[in-house]
Length: 437
Image (cartoon, rainbow, N blue to C red; front, side, top):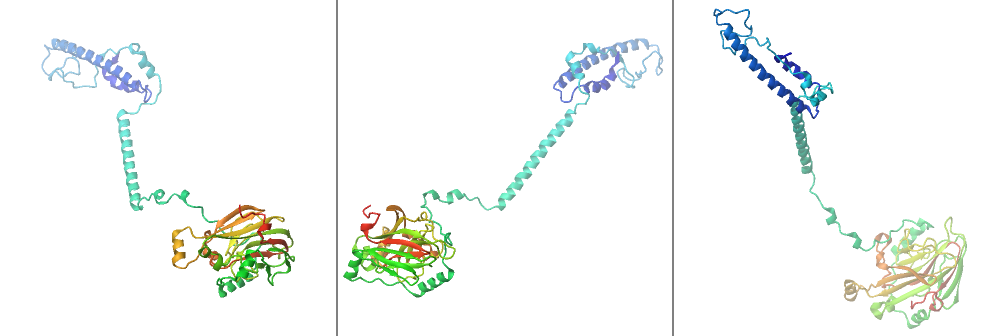
């Protein structure tokens, strides 16, 4: 037997046997609630029965006194249902534990830890959600403040054009050669010479002079810096050699290969090509610690005799030691071809045409700027091996293309440095490359 008023004290002990968060907690509470309702009904029935018996037994008791047989928890001066001593318990029958469902008994057999209060857990959950929302709002406000301080968004992908449709960039040049370099004193002397000596203005050649060039009767001019042997071997052909460790020197044709006053397309109304070849027969000791070699090119006069073609204004050339090309470039040139080996024959040519650009053609026709479109081509052992458009070479650091656009006379030129054996050929009959190709 268990007192009914002890039930509220027993209930926490029972629920403490249920694991916190266990999914059957509500089931167990429902079971307890059912037992509690039945006990309350039994208590009420017992109370009514006891009250009836008491009234029947106390009819002879004087008013205001208590019978030792009457229940001490009833005040006879008050209503029969008023309780004055709730600590005095009424006995009632508690169902035997075996009557509880097996599921509930199984739940009570688990963890000893008390379950969290439902209200506390709900309050904690609400606090957590509120804190998260407040934190998100603060982060959004901070982000908005940062964005307000930034410049407006700029879509660079739309602003930058598609570079895939652009023409290839010009080849980058070098500040010095990787094979050999002239002295800075020689370079400064050449710059002073070019600054103080203007290019020769073109003049119309005499028929005899012009005929000599057309018949390829071209002879070499040996400069004072050239130390060695040089002599014609046939019409339009030379053979020569320089001594070991000879410094930079220049060999020119005695007449221009291109006469601006005669060969310009603006005068002849047709294109003009100039070309010659050089065979490298041998290389010996170079100047100082540098290697020896040669260069092939064209120059507008006057030109410093101690400088190779391509290094100063009004000149271009291709070098055998590193394969670089130079156009009015006193620095390191630009990559062009592989180094030239002994036994190879190389050739260089220029083709002069009317400008294809209508604006350039209009300037040439009406404003007196008689400058042609110029293509440069290179051959190796009789085969075309590259070339470039002269107007690619417009780097002002390198001197531009002054003197090379068909408005000045141009001479064939060989640059030599160190001990070199060579053969030059200006006669088309002996060329490895055929002009009709």
